[in-house]
Image (cartoon, rainbow, N blue to C red; front, side, top):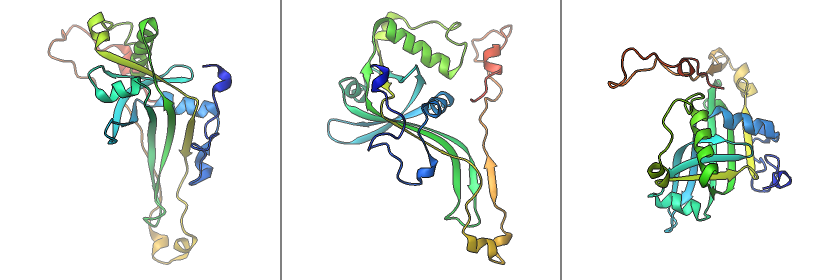
Length: 226
């Protein structure tokens, strides 16, 4: 797909922000930043009987495309490979926003939504996609781990979804309280503000087959959420 076919986030009728439009972001760089910071995407699929499903998947961004994979034995993934329309979302929770009322309380977040039809990848393109997913989850891992065998690749469906119809929403900052609550003698005394959330790996735990002489790789101990 040529660059001219890609559209800025929120630029189509289906992706234009309507609810709290001030949280909508139209810069492509913001879309990339959200996708690059996440680890798990949720993929909407409707089966042949019309029943909806949402699948959590590991993913990676490669240029203007989101990559993900599943089993060739999955009827839902086979449907995606056959051209079924889908919707992929990534949400990053950055904190709780506690207002003086339950109604005005919220969350700080970064989210992206991608609409479209996925394409099945093959050959060297598929292997590169699998490397991208591995490196996105843990940079440095692909150069150390064993790469997929022909049998393993035959059991894997690797798909790419172009970023040509997307939306991005981001919320930051504190609560937007009802002015009446700020003047109320009782409600104005309630603590309000932000409770930030940070993600990090805990201490790695080696499995029983790892020799005690092998140290945890630095690419694991140095990992930080973007």
